[in-house]
Length: 94
Length: 207
Image 1 (spheres, rainbow over the protein chains, first blue to last red):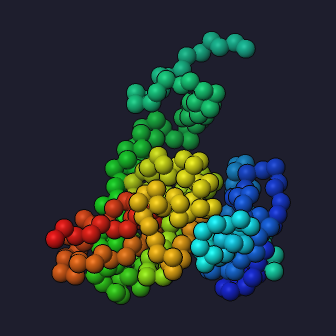
Image 2 (cartoon, one colour):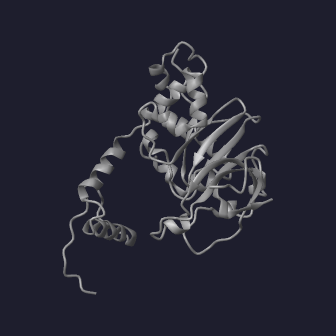
Image 3 (cartoon, each protein chain N blue to C red):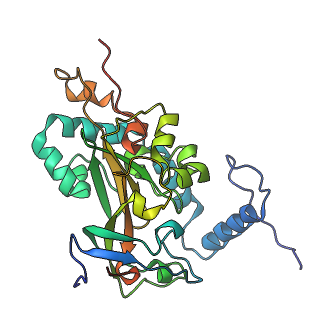
């Protein structure tokens, strides 16, 4: 399947909280990072959780973020980073 | 509500149910078995196999990567297929292997639940599943690592990997000083479970 983003693209993780099972933790929502790698296409957790087959599958990315971007009060080394798996339908260009 | 049918007893090694979630889990299991989704014996077998996995499986892969640069390069780019060349089945769509270096120290968490490379490390330790570890290691990783007596130099970047979806993660620890002459079996003995999660370094060889 085609991918909307490529390695190195700046992306923003959606800041939303639909009332269903999903895989985007609160601390990451609304934050901006860079695509570290494309992981392949996987079933959507929002559909898999309720007996569906997860189709249409969505491209999954690993997003690389600065800790200081995630946490305004990050008190450790400002060079520290975090990488997290986010599905394409939770990302927009930044 | 009428309750006039009988239930099989819980598995012998399970505690007596005490919470609503316990009863819910038991009811779900019974329904899945009654509907023929799986048999009790198939369930038992899956538990038996997953409890037979141990961190020695991951340690063998790390020791090979320390000894064989081509293997390491393949492991870092295609973790699952490369691990499986050593006869270790990876029960996830992909294995991401992240290498500790002089500049970067990696540590793995699943903030949403307890995703873990079970076929390489066995069942996750209790602390890995605790809300305390899960919420703190993404926010103050150095403080958490210090509680494991792991103290990183200021110039080292800590990189936390939150295992939120379909990948599973293995940390490739740094090869310890003084391990130059060791064969893969001796090297594997230096590779602990916690070093492959990233909360500690590998052990140093005894002089």
